[in-house]
Image (cartoon, rainbow, N blue to C red; front, side):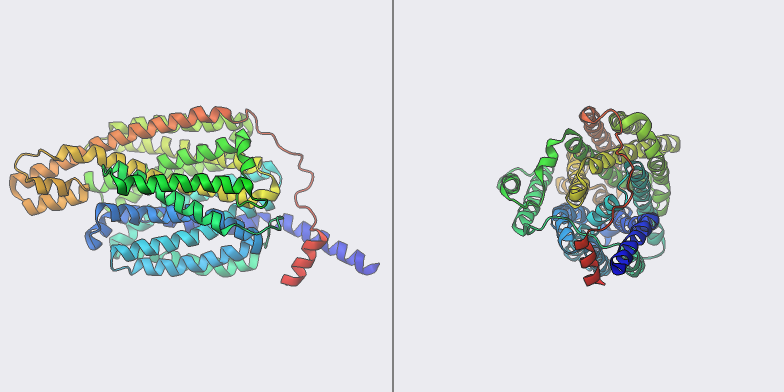
Length: 533
């Protein structure tokens, strides 16, 4: 009897301790997110240096940038559900280790192919890390009011990582070679491994069924096929090599959906998409990231290649976007309670579209005030949208399906980023290249080479020299700015589409009764914890 009483008292102490330490857990999860967010953007300012050193082709350059988000998006469902089986903390720590190894490989890559491979391994590590952070957060913050505040802090840290990436990359490029932008991941990993092992709670899902490896591979190959087809279509390369991967990818995704509906233990419970708030939130995340990542990449090239800013100056110019995003994340919980998910997400999209339309006034000369106001509006609007969409998505999913919901959310985030780079990059190229076909005094072969990218146009102009080289350089700058305007208009249209989509979200933020912050572990969980101890 005394043993039972002592065990019950111990369980109560453990539950109370878990509640008291949930903010410490949030700090550790935010460090995990920072590791992934920095790597997602740190390469942006290094693209010109990578192009000069490794001399990748146009397609190779696109894959260097978007292999990471595409691989990560493809594997999130696999590792999210695997974490439910073997332990989310265990997968998280393995992701840290792989992230460090892949970072070292990327830093010392001697060819475009090696760098693409390293970026793919970074994507695998990111797929291990990202679902665990959200699923653990969903577990340790059962009350929606506290969870909204936690997600606000989490999203503010994501904004910090997105800004620290270009800034840190710019600083390192001023003093070291481009590979140093990857070496910064290693110290973060070395700190995160022991701290995560010590402080993070281990958690598992409730499902006892097997996880579907075949289904995960079908989804991964399908996503790759669709995005590859979109990339080639946007680059003006119709034909069998474009249609085949596009159709194959679409068929595999359809087969994946069919397979999940028939399985008793699916990787993704598709019934969650029957809830309007959940499916709408996922769609809003995709559209928001599609606009954000592609614009950030193009903006970094504009600041460096058109305005002639250094990598460090480019990072500093992008800081207002981050500060505005941080403010939106920290104020998000209060705004969500006051305005509700529908008005908050819809307003965020409209504000972001307004920012994008403001930036269409950019030209070949520097306009500091215009860039400052545009980036401030862009950061606040997008972070408002992402915060409210993530919060609605996680709150709509049942607690026992937190891992699957987190994987879906992160998949939509990464997929939106990957497709954004491919789609907006393709729109940019399609609007940029035709204007260089008839530059006076420039041979057709030189014009074709200059049409690949602005950086390559500058190289061709330098080799030509004289009036022809100067004419090609000026024409390339003008065409790039024209392509940027077209891309911004396309982005604004997508953002307004997101605002219309957000009208399906609930009007008010409905909070469950905060009766129990942390539930007592079941006897089965106690046995598991004793075994693991």
